[in-house]
Length: 245
Image 1 (cartoon, rainbow, N blue to C red):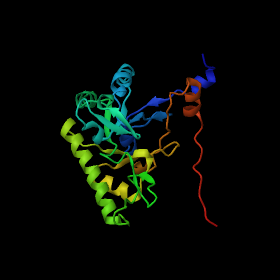
Image 2: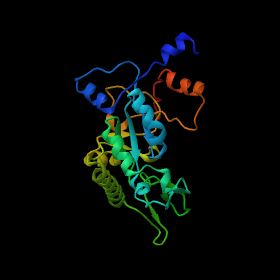
Image 3: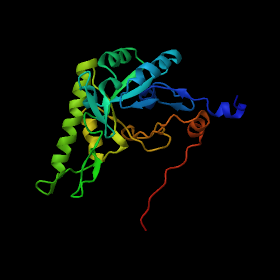
Image 4: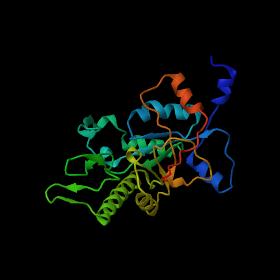
């Protein structure tokens, strides 16, 4: 086993987003070392592997869904990270509805089809679709600000409408693909009923922080338990301040 001091330091309490909102409004207090579990992309393993554990421990979690992958018919493939992936690797809407109705899983938006890179210059560089100004090779022109924002709003609105049509409620959380966003994108998400936005900026959060820029620590690659403990048990460090002199 782990030394007593280590066990004490890693005794976290899993909370829900609703707990955070209630604490910010003074309706309840948060426990020490509170954390929110979030899972991006909507792979079916969230239902087969994670959801049973959520029910076992009565842990809430957030799952972020991209509608473009979920809209594909059964038996077809979708492009994920530049590779064809069977539609069956992702959640079904029946599974999503079951989890949402359980009260343990909050369904968030991960955009409809912004989880990819788009051409952003004459050299053909692919840049995350949320922050890129699309380059049109045929005309040799870039997308302007109004067109850029119209594209983002249309995508976010489409995904929110899709989720509402399937589970009966719109998402109130936007989880940005690749963790990339801009302030106007945050404003668009807020206008569409998603005042909470999550990035991939590492670090701890506190109740005074703006919920439109929630920080998250990324866990990937199935790290050994010792490495995982080192990640979550580390003392939060102050964010660096960038200064031009």
